[in-house]
Image (cartoon, rainbow, N blue to C red; front, side):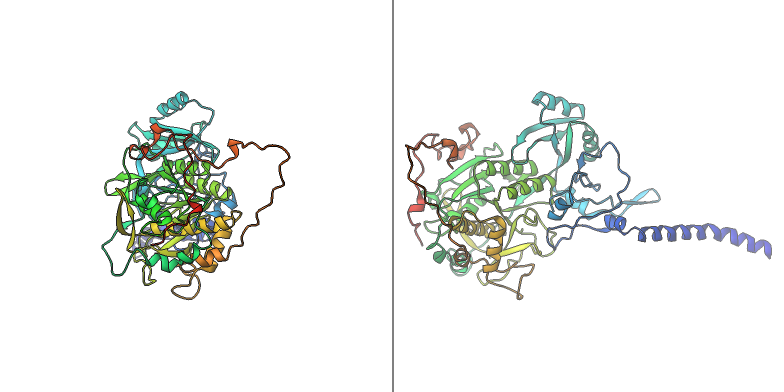
Length: 541
């Protein structure tokens, strides 16, 4: 009998030891809540984009990677050590999560939904890296070859004060393996995948009523235009190519730039977004006298128009370098470290940024750049003040604007009926232009505050995750802006000459860099200036 009990005890002991090990592990995890959060927490998707800083016990990190941030690589995403608490609070620093993949009996179990989402947004076999700015192109090419990469393009970005290169993996390695090896090189400062971004508009069937008129009434545009029309305000529209010859744009100053070197002609989305801002013949845009920088950064890929982290950074750089006061971003993508740096740099220059909330529906995670703390995020409403069914939700939404069954210009001098937060975003960019015309000294936070304070509340009382503060009201917003006092210059004591470097004139790119479909619409440098439509009242349909 004693012999049998001893055998049973020996059989039970391993199970008891295993159970004790599990208990010790659980207690250890509970004793380190910061570490637990680093494993379990994913970004707060329907919350403000201000992601709290996380002081966590970090897992063991390859010492060769410390100091050279590696972000967004598969399921292993690390914060760049140089990120400050302020960077993390602003949502512009790469967020950290350790790999959520665990192993049981040698097999992976579980998977990071964040990592999977980022992977699905990454362009296959492409890496964006900040590199030593003193290297020549030949040296960068040699650097790439040493690590099984090919340089697609590299350039110095004045906006963020860094040299950024776009590389393709050629050696058959995985993105993660190639990135980890590349990051160990002393000439590489940081790197990440080249993420994919998509435009936020969709075609729609004709609806009841007059889709050409309801945005005017909802936004009180005719009344607002008695106070301002957007003259002398520059809006960068980073989008697909705009039909510069469309009759709605007659007399409007639209300067095209190309961040893609694509030969694709005008596109419905870019033309519609520009139309929501500056239409003034059959339609009424929200700022018909504004100056548009039409920065082509999206090209058709399959059924959608797409761009990437690298190309969008080029768009930001062009916008800032050519005097944009407002940047319209009618596109969405994932949280992206390099794009976050660009947004922070634009904000530091007091450039107002407006973005589409997205058309991914109520269950979607937060989309960027709309969810960035520096950006004014806009959702879409219909003619009955109902939320567009496909509109994203989130506490980062600032205001809403008409975005359903809109009658807008399209390519080939035609019109379209379309829907999407892209166009809601464009209307609000135009309203911001009216405000800046009235007082050019307004800061981005002041523009946001006035838009939200003067919005017409919709849905549940108070701000919510669908309409933000409510539907934007152009007349109320412009009326709330104090007119800037214009200083009176003393009579000159001697003849005054104009320093060309001090003017706001914007030159287009060289002809060889412009899309073929738009070259004919551009006049050579030095031709007579475009008419000042700010002195002529736009036609009202």
